Image 1: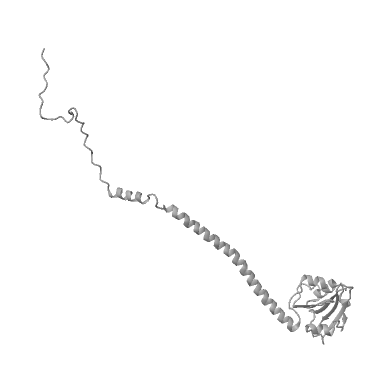
Image 2 (image 1 turned 90 degrees about the vertical axis):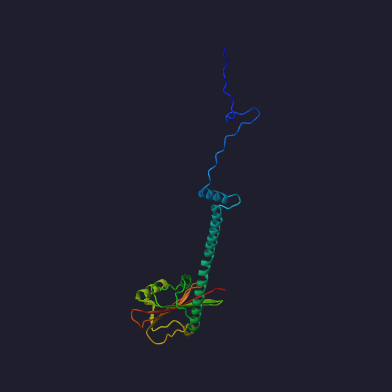
Length: 234
């Protein structure tokens, strides 16, 4: 038989083959692509958000919290300051009004105002609606209290006032002035001259007794003068 022939060995080395004891050669590594400017920027951006660095959202939350606290404090301040301001202004106006009334009362003894509803009820002096001007003064002592009232009205107002007080125009006596000189002097009333008519209403204590005097100098617009007195039982 003819033995197979092998090609002659040459000095050329087959890269795919290796001799015993020699480690196989690794395949040559491919060069990595160079990072471009965008990649470097991305790396820089990722490095900016490294642990320990505060994110934009985290810094916005404390600012929002501080803003809410500031608004809350402002609202509370306004809720306290505005009513307090109104109270101060009202007190100043009331004081000024009280001072002017005191000055007026010191000069004439009369306040240019309606007596209160309570005073009108206690002294039975229901001033008719629409009466103007209206003046009043109240004096008090241990034994008695008196309410002095002066008002200008019309014929309808006079009739209704007399009816509410418990009398009528028929009870008025021409030329009679029922208010005493000391009572008139106390509040500066001048009841001399002119056309006058008056009546007196007597009542048991503690109900009020009244001296009513009416001036008819201006037709259709009588001026009523009343002194109503309440005596206290002891």
